[in-house]
Image 1 (cartoon, rainbow, N blue to C red):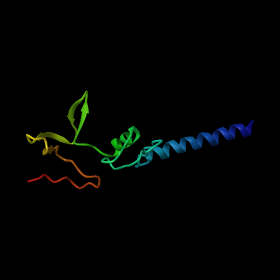
Image 2 (tube, rainbow, N blue to C red):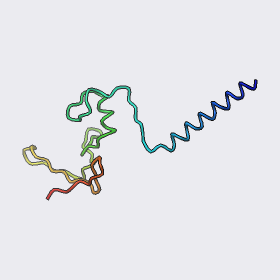
Image 3 (tube, helix red, strand yellow):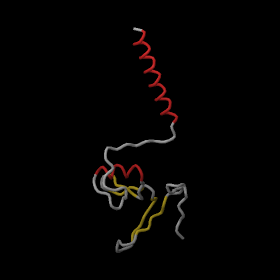
Image 4 (tube, helix red, strand yellow):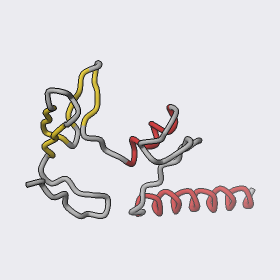
Amino acid sequence: MKRKGLFILVLSSLFIFALTAQSLAKTIVYARPFLGNSIDPATHKGTESIISLNEAYEGLVTTENGRPVSRLALSWQNSPDYKEWTFKLRPGVKFHNGTPSMPMP
């Protein structure tokens, strides 16, 4: 009976330690069962790739109910022939390394 009590005490202590250590971590681990064929957003294929890429990249726009909705872009406009698009970024946008984006002149 003492062994069972000691086992439960040790197991509980390990569980509490694991929860405490996890709550103090400064890194978020995001695990997916399958990353897809590429982490390059220009060449990805498949639903799993899209799900994984959405966690790493933020686009200029997205869609909701089939209509464009801004993400990094505050606004955008196109040339009459739709070959050139100009996006105005929201303030404070930074690259992955913390470098601020620079507005175009």
